[in-house]
Amino acid sequence: MRRKWIVLGFVLVALVLAGAAVAAYLRMTDTPSSGIDTELQGVSVMTATEEVVTEEVPEEPTTTTEEPEEPAETCWEFFGGNPQRSLAREEIDLGKPARSVWARGLGDLMEYPPTFCDGTLYVNLEHGRTLAVDAETGEVLWSRKDKGLKASSPAIAGPRLVVSSHDGTVSGLRRDNGKLLWRIRTAGKVESSPVVIDDTAYFGSTDGRLFAVNVRSGAIRWAYDTGGRINASPSVWGNRICISTYAGSIFCLRRSDGDKLWSTYVKRDILRYESFYASPSTDGRRLYTTSRAGKIVALNAQTGNVVWTYQMNDLGYATPAIAGRRIFVGGFDGYLRAFRSSDGLVLWSTRVAGRVLAPAFVVGDLVFVSTLEGRTYGMRTGDGKIVWRFKGGKYSPGIATDRRYYFSLNGLLVAFEGERSPRD
Image 1 (tube, rainbow, N blue to C red):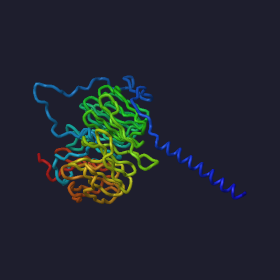
Image 2: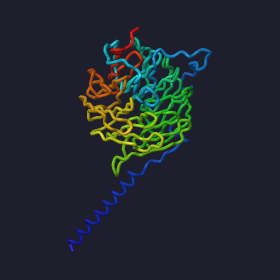
Image 3: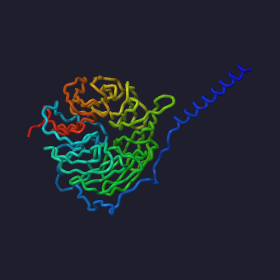
Image 4: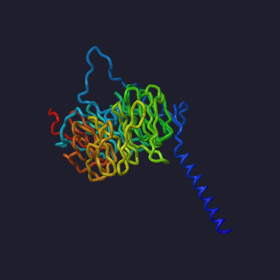
């Protein structure tokens, strides 16, 4: 009789465990609800009574009797260099960094690289400052201090700057003096680096919503609730805007009205979804991103179908850089890898002395990456051979213009001329 009760006890425990496992499975496989958010709960737009500058910023002329004047150098207006977040300027041939022109200690962490246009660099610092820096001399032109950490790149929008913050705000500033024009407060933190197309800025919030906002007034044009935390920055190709989330989802929406085109949830295993910190990048055919568990994912940009995946040996947080039908991704396992973009074939992998957290960027035939251990490397895109090293850096290593490299080496902003930089 005692043995019978023992067996019955084991059966009951097994049934309870089986039920718990089924419940966990159903919970983990249940995707969050999503859709256009018409209520906009927890969102506010600052009014003029809250010391917002109300004068209209002169717009840059769009139609004249003469050809519009081109910028002296190609602008790098957003994180990633363009709306696609490709992190590449293949057409620029500066050669290896050869001579530092100036170096400016900023006294704070610079997790994301600067943006650039019309001879000025714009930088966000961790503890809330946004700076404008003369690209020729390194002189700070203006500095604005706000509440909230800033782990993002400011977006350039004509005469305006769009700045996101961990205090949940996104602000429109004057580019010439940093004065506040408007401010939106969301219900979450905003680490997403905005991207601006025409007169609309797009960014995500950790409250799960992707926003479209008028850059002149701060008025919200639409908001889409993905149902998953957003730390990533949206990627745009034509009228398609795509975002990745911590819920393991990638959404692509119609940019003009926020209508969903497709969504894909990527599984880690039978019970769990992946989680994405990295932003998506796109070449128009495919969309690429990296999960926090180290899975690189390529999806068909039109349908959202997974084309290929690759599992790294450790964590992954880096947005893939795209250049020459290749993508470049670093991971915590200490490797920078080059993949064939069409099928994920590993073309080369190069080990560096440390963990790679942030995205690489490509200039001409070189790809640059920094490690958490404080080293920055330049490699040939063709074979991964290391051709340049610098003792400094930690996060996203920098940007390039037609004339110079600008490296964001943790708290140090450094201008380098390349071996083939044009001479004045």
